[in-house]
Length: 187
Image (cartoon, rainbow, N blue to C red):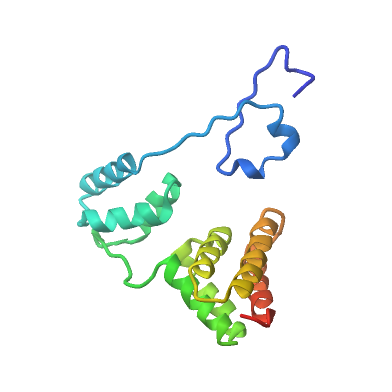
């Protein structure tokens, strides 16, 4: 970048600026772009009308809420849940419910059941294991664990969210996080 900076301009885009190494960040001007959910909802309504899909506004809003701000992922989830011209969302199938169930399994000492449960429900969170860990972080933060156990658990999940940027297999990383949470004696 420095060699050609006099004759070239670079534009870098990223969903997660914290994943860009500091050496690159220091050479760039940063612009945070905030999105409004309304245009995404309007776009899904438009797609539904054009494709003659029977759907409710509340179902579209739910899809947008769970996948915001990733527009491509939002449209893919919308398409994936259309069968015979009808948008049908599975009741109870949400990333929040999966994280709550995983946390219950870990607390109950059934960590070996967690991997099968995660793999069975990959379609719900679109194999986005870093997002699953982020959701798990929120579930633990809102849990009734004592302060010490909560701090230890949150730090553990944070470490595995960080590691997810470097690991080869996201599913194994997430499962390892659950195993380490289960080994916390105070959980």
